[in-house]
Length: 373
Image (tube, rainbow, N blue to C red; front, side, top):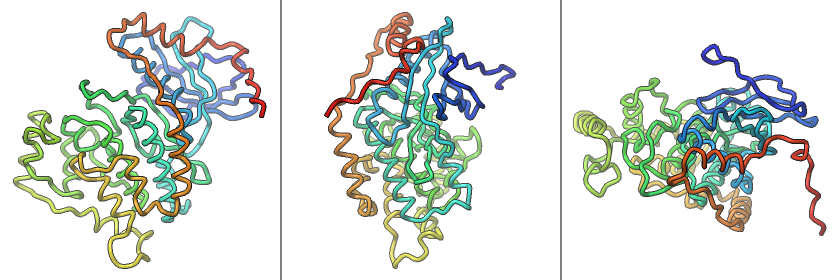
């Protein structure tokens, strides 16, 4: 229930809905039995409500469909629309009951450096695949990273994802607040490095087994203060013409520059992460995962490594064969083409959605035969 309105899943008899397991602004997810297996069934409602809604739904559908080549993106088994006239899209995805947030909170689940390294490199592989296809996830958080018992992870929830266009002004009400990069908080331009920042926050949380920047709800100033305290205050010239924060809003710029002048902070991130019990038995000097986190959590987005470059970090050497194999598989895939939304009317957007997602029929359940060797 949300706002006293029941969530209705209009699904065919092939699915036996068991319970709601997640709900957000742009859809709800239930656990369902499908052909003797459990699936996560996502309902994305009302795609014909407005042009904005139609664009968002079409983006999410196309990204999920075209990124299935990436093993670190949640697997989708079926896309369909109900047989009724309701303008909803359903996606049947692999059911993975645990997310990274619950793993970090549950101290009965062991986390050592090898597990953290494996989780982090998989996250970067997912982000690399998205960025290679010019897609920003825009909501990388521990709740959107699903985890198997073997530490295999899958990035999910692409409801806020966008295709990157340097000429387009992106909205700022994105990314779960505690994983939000400084450039988004300050209403500046942002792009791929904002996803990299979010992975850096997750790495810090894995090392500490607690939240890194737990800001007060809907309080951007408090969120920024926590970042200043841990990563240090930048130089005021970061707001100068030609610099990354040039286009910050006036209010954000005034607040940040006043804070920098009155309460300059030295970085505390390294000291904090080095206190992790996981790293206490390390040799002298700054451990490799902390050095990586320092790079990922640079206040200046231009100083953060790309997802591809992050995967070349020395800390990932024990995973090098796996990483190289995954990168090779990604690079064999052609860059997918996405619908150009420019100038499309609501009717044409709805047509594009309905062309991409068929009405459910039993024919959709017929598996295609494997190719003959």
